[in-house]
Amino acid sequence: MLRKMLAKKKGEEGFTLVELLIVVAIIAILAAIAIPQFTKYRLRAYKSELDSDAKNIYTAAQAYLTDNPSATVDSLAKLKDGGYSPSSNITFVDGSMTLSTGSIEVYSTALKASAKNNNAVIFANGRMNLPSSP
Image (cartoon, rainbow, N blue to C red; front, side):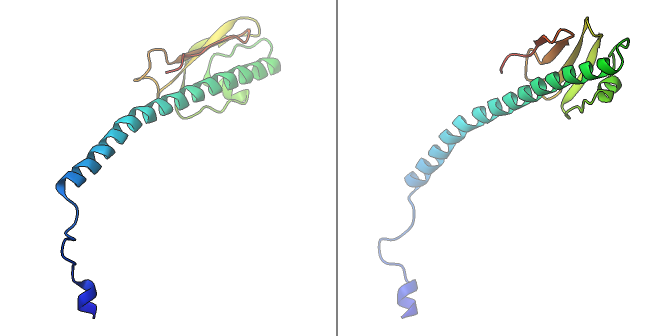
């Protein structure tokens, strides 16, 4: 009885080569659509991280300058004193800011190789030049 159940019926031989090629072609088409979209999602996430950090830098600079009105924010250490906690992909480039003038520039190391404009400039008046969407 077990032999009868395990024995193949005549005509049941598996998949044909054409069927397998069709399945491979469908998978290739889906991959060709999904991979570029995934890359765009990652770039948008890095840009959002940079935007968020730029806003946090401005808040931390204002907090530091409120506590030290005659000081100048010109280093990452002073921003950290103001409460800024940098993300792993964000790098302080340059700049100095007082209560009324100046700017600070940061960039995203994750966007550096893939974006033309990957830096953000934060001005003392609250205006920010942020990178455009990828």
